[in-house]
Amino acid sequence: MDDLQIVPVYNKVEAQYVDMMVPLYSYGCEKKIKKALSHLKGIYSVKVDYYNQKVMVWGICNKLDVLAMVKKKRKEARFWNIEENNPESVDDSIVVKEDTIKTPFDSHKSSAYYTYSSSSPRFIRPPLSLIRTSSFTWKAVKKVFSRSLSF
Image 1 (cartoon, rainbow, N blue to C red):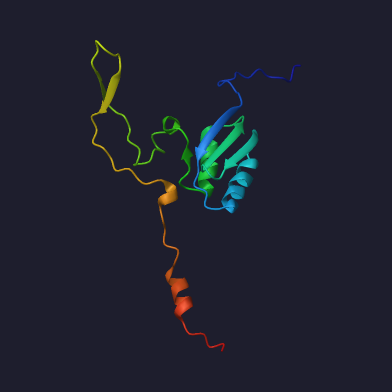
Image 2: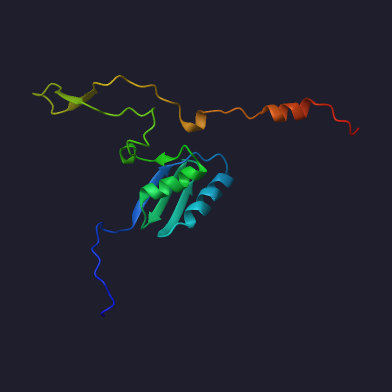
């Protein structure tokens, strides 16, 4: 008992769910994400939903570390809920509510409030499933159209 030390615990450690939106283009991407996350310490299960482009991780882990690991495989990965994103990792496409002004709407009939942002609206990007990239490179085009001397 003399060699044991008492160490203060700064954070309450509990198992948590981490939901992320990850662009998955094929079932190979699904396997790649599962394999990368299964090697992290403290992760109990990884569920990948290909149709909803969603990855659910359950375990004792830091969600920022999990997101960093997924971003190594898919750079466009982000948390499922916008509120969980850090200011550093928020896309330009997300409108951040700064300096909000609450105004009552017909206060004698209803207690509903509308929230207005004083910042200028930003452009919204289309969902990741609608973004197309060019599949041809100059090297591939040159290879197709160059004459082969083999026949």
